[in-house]
Length: 204
Image (cartoon, rainbow, N blue to C red; front, side, top):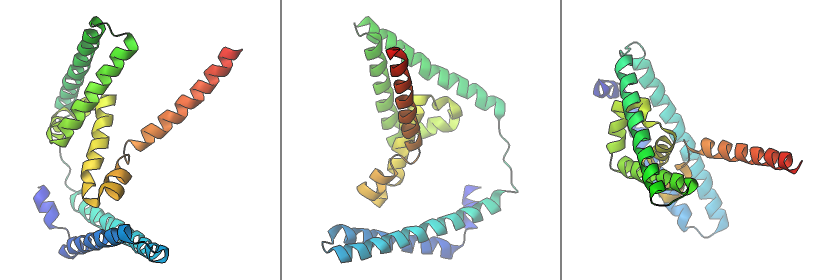
């Protein structure tokens, strides 16, 4: 089905997207090497224009794809999805609790044990995402893999892998927090506000 839908996309759109992508890479490389400020500004404007063109054609292709599939609903196995989400999510939480108890038994206090478990979950999720296993688990477990830490780690690594071809600066570095960025920003802001309120309440 996916292959049939992809074939309905206009070939000229796919060719144009690839052409713009190659031009973007060339301009990006020239911009990185440029030393003259005027030349660098010119190349920067060209890069931004190409990025806009790339975004426009991507939106056009996405609209074409959605128009092709909107009349072909796919049945959703709700019960199976709920069971798998419950089982996998519960398994992740159970393993995390077992690790927490193990670290506590080794003499770590509660905060250190929690930090150790979170670190292990992030590392394991990052590795499994990088080698393509975590996404396969996610297809079967659904929301069960969106346990806060594992889902957060997966979103960061996935974005980094997706835009790796754009380079380490404008690709990985720029897009790394595309999905997880709002969580970091709002979480930090809310934490700061709560800390200030708690500080003044404690002062009284």
